[in-house]
Length: 185
Image (cartoon, rainbow, N blue to C red):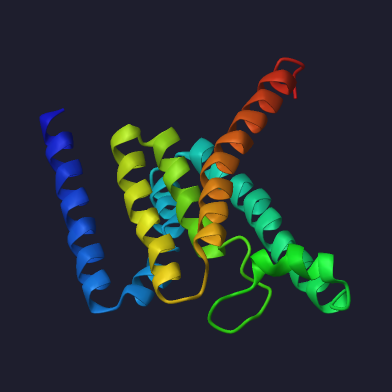
């Protein structure tokens, strides 16, 4: 038990050193790299043959990314189709990217991805890892704001969708599986 705690502290330290070094080198690159936190998380669970968290990761990604990119496409479509309507343009303004004016910024996909990983870590690895990944994910969102790819509203929407959306998906999937496993499925 003591060795496992030491190993976890070592992993947290190594990941933290890498994150800090990458942030100091280029904070935009940090956001681009750490949005992929789901990949090592999934690979770890696959290697450990922990298929329940792996299933949760896959289902959460499909649903949350579907919602996020559905919103992005919807705002972009509305902006280009109804550009003559002032009230539609006022509404879709929340999706405008600060860097280039495109209407593909709501919600932040990078931030949603990082917060999906944080929610899964919270649920399957414990609060220590969950809080740690929330901090790392927060810096992903912050890097998107600093580099003018997103507004704070877009980043907050991505964080809420990623974290709380994943927790809701996990609850719904578990409830569905509990209900249907009793019937022999």
